[in-house]
Image (cartoon, rainbow, N blue to C red; front, top):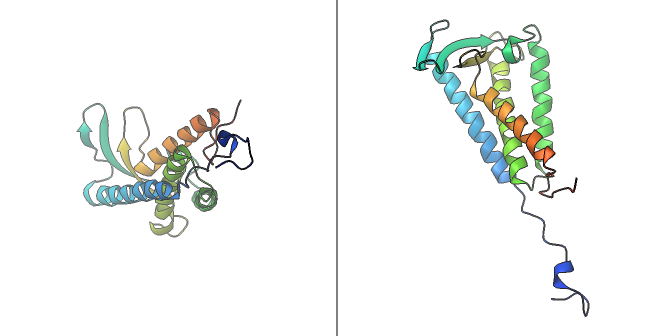
Length: 177
């Protein structure tokens, strides 16, 4: 229906895209659950320092408990990493309320699920709350041992960079650059 006589129907503002909170929650929950399940299995079935070859020359499983950040950097800063993870989780959840972009929903879901996975380790694993060591067990040639949460965080961060560079907004709009 025309708002005023002679006005074009195409001039009307289109309805905004639907919210993508469901997709965001599904991605985050899937990453979190897979991360936690694989860590439980790694602790139950792997022995530290005894690698299990999955694909020769490509992937092996080797249980390692990491008190630091990626690549075991800053091993004495576990409490700081825990607090940073709490802040990241809070910011991502706060941002998620505005999601109308599939890409942003997937990317932020990956980051949230990964951050929550590693934060859970820091909260509940030895040596104690906010000081717990993260369980790592995946090893590629010439690469430090990592876990699914780490992979999700890195993948989500790369997607966020790509989405930002292509001008996509949280609301699904595309900026003219």
